[in-house]
Length: 397
Image (cartoon, rainbow, N blue to C red; front, top):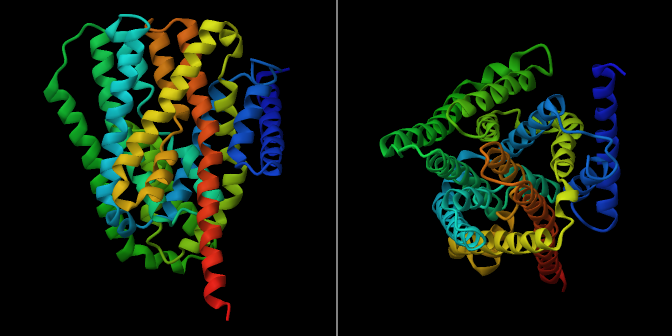
């Protein structure tokens, strides 16, 4: 087969497998993303070997998660984010400090190598906004206060994770830490988020009327997709994840009068492209490297540490919302997903990780992405059921 034919076959396999995995997950009352990640392990190199992650598939995966976060931004207004800004900041900061400190101490206990320990800890830090956002969207919970806190904290997480990774890489390379340079990078990242978020929404509120006079009914969607892809690229130039720019683009587009129409028109694109992100996340796990008892023990401890530290950080940061809401936020911050995978890949390429530790970090990132969504969905469902019960009780004569 030619390269193009092989890629098309893999695209077909991923898409078909994602539908099967999502359906199976729904049958046992789990979010679609769990089934899609698990089916990725099955069709990936570890088991069936039908799909091998490579650049063409990674591009589709990146576009899929970019569009997902854009659609999440469409349902998130700037004013809503402002209302939970304090809680989001607390969750983001505390949710980085606790996992990083605990991850460093644990990694150092299994091998007295500080550069390696810091690299391991960096994989514990940032939340995967894409995975949590998919669950929140599927549950229809994006407009809840807890959801806004989670998404706002994920942006802060990304900035702090970027700075920590810069520090870790400099230490590992034996270079000097330039505090001024790090502060400048942090200032650029924060400035990008604040300026784009504020100025973009202001301009859209005043200038969105012209979108109503287009002859092509898809013109508003095409315009905001240009905005989405453009800001996603610009975000990477500031050292941030592309999904942060996409999320901001969605927030800006949410100020248009066509927001509901845009949300509906995005659904086919999301159905086509987002499964690639979740299936490939699962396909990146190398189960063969986890066959030994030592590797499984390391994976167990790493996963428990990742779960507990992020849950504690999110819970403490959101405690002002009430214990139950804080628990929802804490669970929503648990998935590491692609962030941990990126850190692991950097550690392997830098010669800091061996194959076993690399596989442990990858598997930990995957397991947190599988474990958290069902609990998040359960907590949200219980709140919805309780609200419905109280409504019926009020109406009952």
